[in-house]
Image (tube, rainbow, N blue to C red; front, side, top):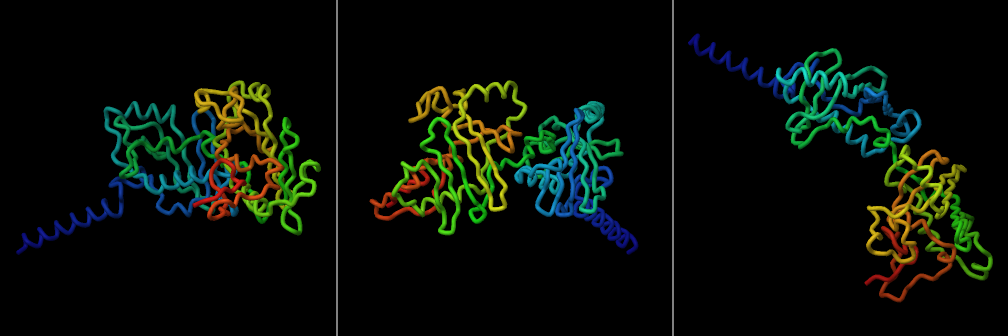
Length: 362
């Protein structure tokens, strides 16, 4: 009888140990040196990243959203990925003895320091992350103050997570070029230096929208109200492809290509967002290198442009697919819609092409 009680008592202790290490402590390791998971990421108020080259990234939660280095909006996709990583990553196993010295050397010379704070500014976690494990399944991490590195991974994820802790500012900056909702759009000025007849100023007035353009071009004509209404929706959440600040010889490239157009969008509060759009020289990525694009000089890329934005502080690449709907010309606002089909398409058109010239659908 006594042996049976001892046996059952042993089973209970084993069960409690399994529950603690498997269910309560997901990693099975001491949380003070291997607790790389933050389950409640909504409690995070600030994340600081620093590499060994002096590059730093500060992500701060504000009432209006997350702020990058105290001045830029944060790219939401990158932030979501980082928060998911902090919530999901777990220590798989400690680095073995054979790899220990090499990993410690990597952590000392190449790692990124990660500091996480709550909304009150109190420190939640500090650790170092670097590289990928030998089988590319996981990254090396070590808690600040610990001397034991671990291989850390997201369960079910194939790859490594160290790249998500990037200190490249381009990976964190929001890529918005224009962001003015229709209700707040006051005016748009579009100028083509080589096609002045196509210039216009698009304005909100008491009757909706009106256009200022070459008088001889619009004399006696009525603005197409549907087109004007559709156009006014095109300045909310307009993104660039990416930042190219710091590219070698970029300034000289911009100086030697023609200015295609200048776009100025002004909100009701008087804030103006501007983009100077330049032609991009033909390159290996250009689709029209092999197949000419109608109306585009063969020396320029037909799908992408350079744009100088944010008070000429940043240079970005923009896509025709995104901006073609904005690149309109004055006369287009005075054309009648094509209603020859069985029904007129009146929805906000998607993608590139003649997005104001609504065609017919069947």
